[in-house]
Picture 1: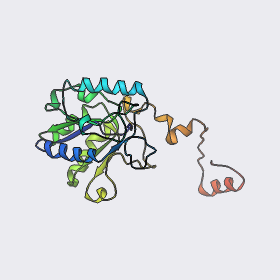
Picture 2: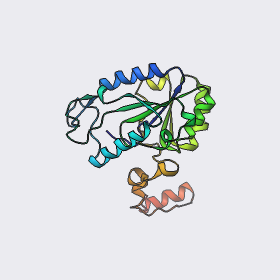
Picture 3: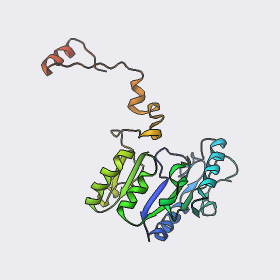
Picture 4: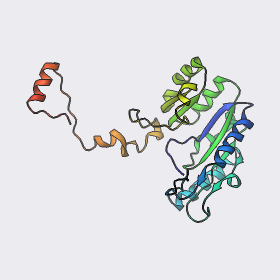
Length: 229
């Protein structure tokens, strides 16, 4: 039910709202929520009841600027949702993202996302920058020139920018795919806690040194027992 790189803002061209909502509703209707030990389940509970209560509080705040278009009645539960920290996926629609604030600032650490329509590409980048940074973002586009521009505009605000085009989309669903060689972290508050995992976490248990010498000398040192691990 929780993921650090999960999408919380869906920025789409104005006029595509209905199509996107219907596609998400269809996908979520097939997403079974329940015991993660069940191989058919695709979404588990939140970490605890305190987080469930916090998610509900965050959702209520978002409702002041956006309307719920997919909610609990659309969820596919394999368990009784009141028995535990289960939380139904919620999708909201904000009709005026340029004048809104909470939809950009509040992060509900759970299955909650807000659709934000834009009129021009420039407006899309402005909306994206209003989020204060994140661990990851994705650009879904078949236009290579636009994708290139998007990377330049989005990289300063996000730890990882994933370009999803027709070729990449064949292999996976797109956003959230984590590759080991990619960095994990982000600017500002988005980078908090990154030392808890990955290579950066391991660095706390090592003392690192640098050796500047010719390749021949380095090989000699290795032959004499120098360890680089």
